[in-house]
Amino acid sequence: MPDKKSSLYSVFNNKCPRCHEGDFFVTSNSYNLKKFGTLNDNCPVCKEDFRREPGYYYGATYVSYAMTVSFGIALFLVLCVGFKVDAIPYIIILSTSLVLLLPLTYRLSRIIWIHLFVRYKGEKKI
Ligand SMILES: [Zn+2]
Image 1 (cartoon, rainbow, N blue to C red):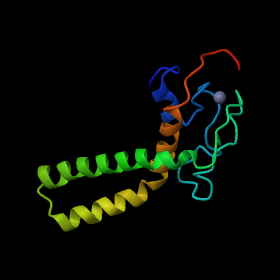
Image 2 (cartoon, rainbow, N blue to C red):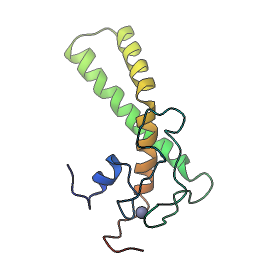
Image 3 (cartoon, rainbow, N blue to C red):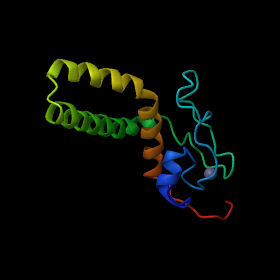
Image 4 (tube, rainbow, N blue to C red):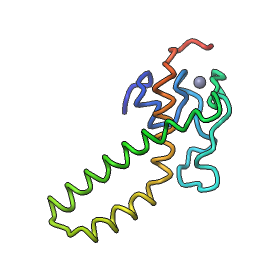
């Protein structure tokens, strides 16, 4: 488990990038399909604005794209190179996996994106 001061801790626990304590999303369950993508407007602890500006999270699509392509390449190497699986089963497995992982990818891409622009401010309250 990463240190609480680490950005990895904050990203994988869906915490505020500034204080690493407040929740970034309304629900901690990624598979609550009605609310998995709903952000808190502000951090409940330090009041960091998570809504920042209209269109702010469009940039998260680049992060999502990079994660999806990386996953596809890794799956290709494991299945097609390692286990000699044909292309059609690979495509079916990849498509199914991406649909099932969509809530995780969506949330991770947004929280990674905001971590690129907001720095941790330590233990002090802001
Ligand atoms: Zn905070």
